[in-house]
Image (cartoon, rainbow, N blue to C red; front, side):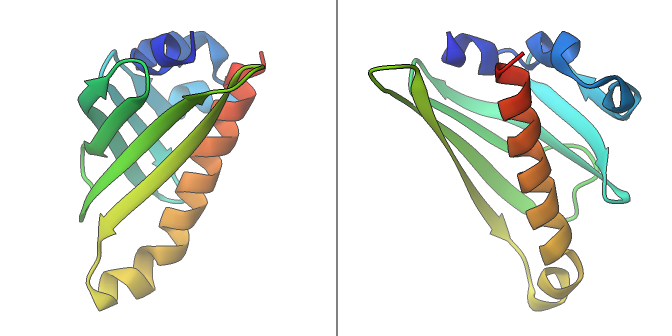
Length: 117
């Protein structure tokens, strides 16, 4: 069930909080969002059912990154792990490092809230 949900981002449309719906564009393979004053997006680049979804940068993102979603079954439910691998030079790291961390934290919080609705 969790893999199915994450393998089609458009399924999150109804799960978005009302105050976020106008800031996020969802398709089956992409998420494009306004966060912390910048536009960040991801697109699915690889799927390995039922345990892995790999995403990469999408839209006007000034650096390359991969975001891997690992799904591990547990006795009750599953465990999700997000792994971000970003290629940032020193200047970008100083300018954007905190915003990227905030984006990932916000992304994981919204995913958890979406799953619990």
